[in-house]
Length: 460
Image (cartoon, rainbow, N blue to C red):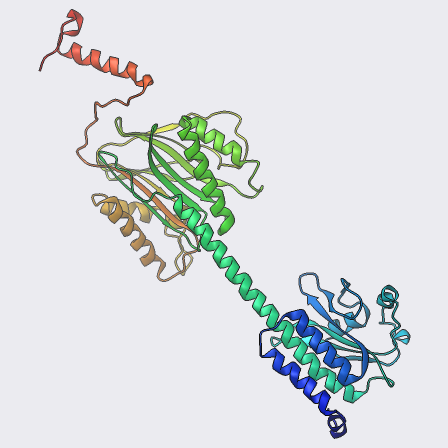
């Protein structure tokens, strides 16, 4: 406890110095400048030769010399030396003869050439009770530090702790803002890869939905008219946040590039897998459905790396046929060869329904998952509605089932519906490899009219 004598012994200049420190804390400050101000005040009012501040690194549980007179870049573990003992015990240590105290570490003296005689070491405790550092003053001019000195030093140490804690909070806020900006940038990049509008495919109704659980997500989808047909993609990278978002964005871009260069489905799928495998961490991969719809034959050819179930809703019966993945997730391993694509034929009113785990595994408060059965019930009840409406119905059903439970995973849906009453078309793609099919169709048509074998011509 401070004695009246300790207070009255302070000079007017000492009191003004301490008040200057308090005023400085209320204004913006540079940490090193502020700590230098505090240590200078400690030297003045305590009549000490030297003073220093050690910052506590919570990640390594070490003390790092932040401000000192003639030495820098010193780190000591908590528990080592007088400053380490002070940090460990979180109590002031007043030592009249340092070289007689077994806790004293003379190594700093040896490096600096200074001779420490006596010391007063105080812990710096933040407002939350956590250790932020240690302040130490050395060698009182006219003897050793007494109880009154310790009281004054405690007041200055509190100011020093405020400075350190304030800077920590400011750094945390700045880091949080930086992370927010990085997440927003990643979100913009990811969202820019999604279709801005649905492609127009005669006889089809298309819809894609993406609802990330966080600011960025590990899901992606694509619906795009390319030379090879309608490209249909649904991808889900392990994890959440920036890294998975970048992984699926990269996969998305590589697929588009492969098809733009003329690759067929099998080649594109294999090339993307083999490019992802050496770059993804061992515990990361992407489950992905990659398919091509031929809107003339109404056939979807696809490969699915770990993405399933693949739902084929059959309008004629109201049944939902489930298809399994065709292989391992993308990036999980190098593929020894090219696997042949699987085909699904869409009859009028049929739908290809692709959903990520965020739909099937949306959990209610009691831990029950939404599941495939409920998905199929929504499809049967609303399959005649436009896909955009059906997608909204499915989301409404999921949220009603969840009863307010938070979304824990990304929710992504792709619906490809062949409109009722669309018969098979006799249009042919403008490619060299379609000539044989065109000739065969023409021959069959002429034979049906009884003219082909006579070499005659048809007229309307």
